[in-house]
Image (cartoon, rainbow, N blue to C red; front, side, top):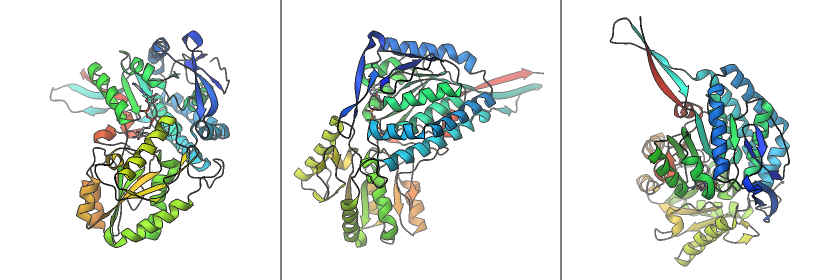
Length: 479
Ligand code: NAD
């Protein structure tokens, strides 16, 4: 493969070659800490996207015939190369999207497990034998890769999403066209270099950088895309879902959230508080599974608010490379305005800011609100900042009812020693994921990760992706 590696001038990776955008168009990628230029990336257009899809389609017949052990070896080599380039990947997560070092390391480590877990999928693309009603017939199903998989990823966990979705698609024999977030193209470009060096055939993995609103439809609506996996905001997910429905393209959508945490009166606050803080302040709340609603039973409510405010006041907003720093910059002007609007709207309508609410540069202080009511935007909408609301409740039943009062359904958590209530909650919360005595933020490579309602369609993870990214074929032999 032609490997041209200019870290700051990012090109598309199509058919095994590094290429500029048509007309050599570019766009600036900014470091969100101070909005200084970080990189210049190729600004893809529809023609670039069509070339990438054509490359993936051309590569597919050969790639699907590769053996499990070949794909396994390439994927395990990817993991080795990631380890060799750990510093570069972590630096990129810090400087391109403003990850504090501890979040960057969390993401790097998670990304590695995603790739290694994907290697284990290669040998598991299996069908079964099926008894037949027709005498003398041998009947079986075989599982086949779908073809060309379109992958669209968000800015906030670019390495986790890239490793998981691309590696899973490649593991089961598909080729891939990837549109990374315009806010995080460099991370994906490094990953493409690693894929190339690991030995994957030309065209197996293709990356087009650019703006989703300009070229997203050229990927999503392309007739040669056989499966699409999207992670991002609910509004874009809805648009993609409509296009895929029209084309009958199967799709998984991993979208936004408004994940609740319930704290019952018998919970141990010494254990709850650090986890509560982690679940909304990690990466400054720019996590789909962050907990933006806390329902606390009345006997613990005042103490919970007091302790949470104390922690919020101490969460580090220091140098991003300091391992103790937690609070990241908010990614873009648009997102900063959204966070500011949500806080201002709540305050104007009578909410109380019990911690934070102010900004230091592009960073929003960890912010806690009480007295939040239905007419406030942040009561129901995703803020995507280090901002959460705390509500008192008089019973477990009230907590469950309020936790379910949302159109989203991604993650959820409950803290209690009462196993009956804990399991009742887990079974009755309208969310795709529930953590008992653990934070809403939790993901592993092989679990069914995903949400319901406005939070998405389908699940990710090795087993879920193996099913979603392959198709069963029924074959009979008349003996
Ligand atoms: P976003 O929707 O703005 O962008 C996501 C991706 O969609 C980007 O690659 C963007 O270029 C692309 N895009 C934009 N318009 C498009 C179009 N018309 N067609 C196709 N693609 C298009 O989201 P974001 O700001 O990058 O990420 C934050 C959102 O993602 C939050 O809502 C968060 O909850 C969600 N998220 C969900 C999960 C999950 O697993 N459920 C994980 C991470 C983030």
